[in-house]
Image 1 (cartoon, rainbow, N blue to C red):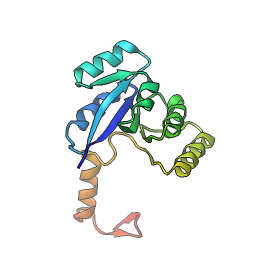
Image 2: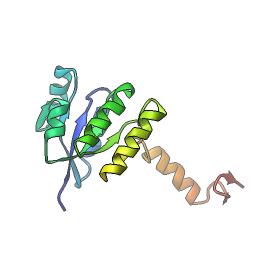
Image 3: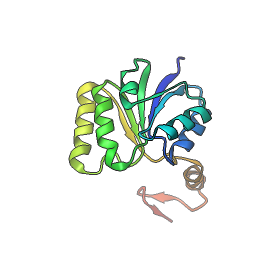
Image 4: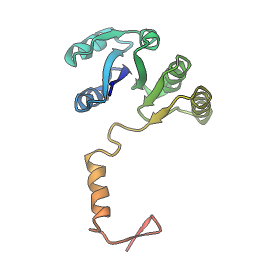
Amino acid sequence: MDKVKVGLVGCGNICDIYFQNAKKFSNFEIVACCDIIEERMRNKAQEYEIPHMGSLQDILNNPEIEIVLNLTLPQSHSEVTLAALNAGKNVYSEKPLAVDLEDGKKIVDLAQSKGLRVGCAPDTFLGGRLQMCRKIIDDGWLGKIIGGTAFM
């Protein structure tokens, strides 16, 4: 199986967990990164051995990249996501998808019209803590789930 190639946009505080966790999976690889602060981008590319770095446009123009990992500030999420979708890339974004409902609808509509996928969740989605909570529930440590929401 070929690895899915990912371009990471936004090398701020949250990017480290994504770079670290990406190394644990064999089915995808972060091959490019960009940030508006060039020094930060260069440092992360060097630290995590990312082969390509440059601008958002460089990532969008790279034909090997299938997914854009959008880790920009929330007020930039919709702009970056819409640009990626228009470039034919699938997008996974750190929360929130957009800062207002109208932009969120534009993102979903554009993705659907182009046959692309968008996803949005924090990096900790179904991480260790939530996995343990799920195990506690599934193993019946708290009792039976009734109606999907109540415990007995």
